[in-house]
Image (cartoon, rainbow over all chains, first blue to last red; front, side):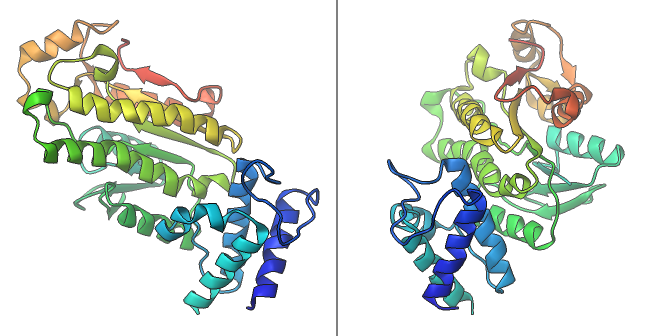
Length: 93
Length: 225
C-alpha cells in the first residue's frame, strides 16, 4: 500500500460515513472549527478504517498513546490521517 | 457476550454468576484467574495495556459485546490525612482509571452494532459523604462524573451508560467492618436496610435489559440516598 492508496481508502471511508455528503480532498479538516465531521462521525470513520486495515492485513490503532498524543496532527486533515494510516500499514508489514 | 470486571469476588462475581446462570455468555476479568463458573481472563484493569490486549483479542475473535459491567474496584477506609500517597494513587488508578480504560477500549466493540449497556460501579458513599471514605469516594465520584458525560457521548450510538451505587451489601468484604459502622451508613439510606448481592444483580439485569432503554446517564443509589 502506498500513500496515494491510503488517501483513497481514507477518502472513501469519509464518503461512506457521511453518505457522500463530504467531498474528500487532501486538506479537508476532520476536527476543529471547520471540521467536516462531528465527533460521532469521526469515531465511525476510525472504525471504518479499522475494518479496511483488517482487509489489508494490518491493524489500524487509533487508540494508541502515540496516535492520541499526536491527535492534533493525526486527525487534523484527510492528508494527516492518510499518512498515519499509511505509516501503520508499513509498520505491520 | 457481557463483560464483567472484578469478576473473581464480591459483587462482580455475584453479577457474573447470576448472568451466566441465566444463560448469558459472560467473560469475567480479574487480576487473578480462579476456578469460576464462567469464562474468565486475567486482566488488571488499572493497566491500560492489559485492557487493550483483552479488547484486541475480543475484536479478533469477532465477539459481539452487548454489556459491560465495571465492578472492579478496591476500597481503603481511612481518613484522608492518614492515607499514604501510594494508596491514594492505587485507589484512583484502579477505581477511576480502570473504569475509564474499560469504557474507552470496550465501548468500540459495541459501537459497531449501535447497541449496548454499560454499568459502572460507584458507591453510596459519594452521595452520603462518609467519614473515612474520602479518597475512595473521590475515586467513585470521578466514576459518576465520567459516566454522566460518557453517557451523552455514547447516546448517538444507542449505548447507555449508568452507575450503580451500592451501600453496605452482605458480602465477604463486609466481614471486617464493625456492625455500628454499617448501621450508621444504612440508617442514612432512604430504605434503611442492608441489601444483599441478589438485589444488586437484579438492578444489573434491569439496566442491561430493554426495560431500561429510557435510562442513561443516571446513578442509582441502592437503597436510596
